[in-house]
Length: 208
Image (tube, rainbow, N blue to C red; front, side, top):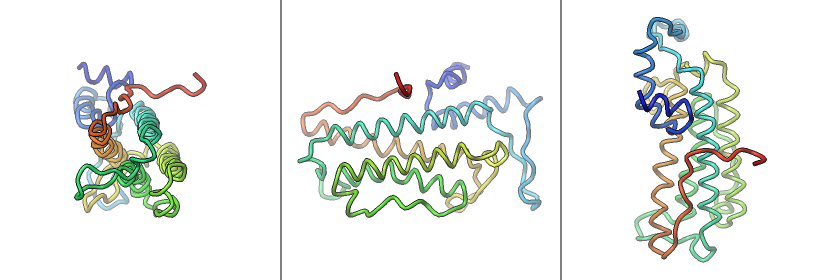
């Protein structure tokens, strides 16, 4: 399957990989799939573990999301940081915050803890430099939570909006929400005669 091959190369986002790749992989590798133990002894159905490489893909996607969000933040002129196309929607800084800072809330849900303190909202919604710091804290927290989990914990289930959900899927939802929310900001640039930062298929390699 083409999507499966592309996912292994990191071309397909984690959100798309979650929706398309995992069912196919589970079907193809049923004979040798490792199965997570029943949760906490309460008789929950065991769930297949995601492919070993899937967490690496999600971690790379977290970095791509961080880089693209920061690129949008850095590209918007100071005079338009609080621009909104119509009165009913969030302004630019509010939308950036909703796209990036909620990533840490998703990660906290996956871990079963409280979200980190990202700072005073009045400060980060009012100043680009403070928003940058809050965004990095959010993505750092999500990265550390995901990378710190054992394989069994990563595949285990938590309550997510009232439904039992594998932790890897909570992280996938965080990435999908970030893409969806940040994508709305393209119009904020276009309506002001500007070209938004380009979409990046691959994370930038550190030191390159």
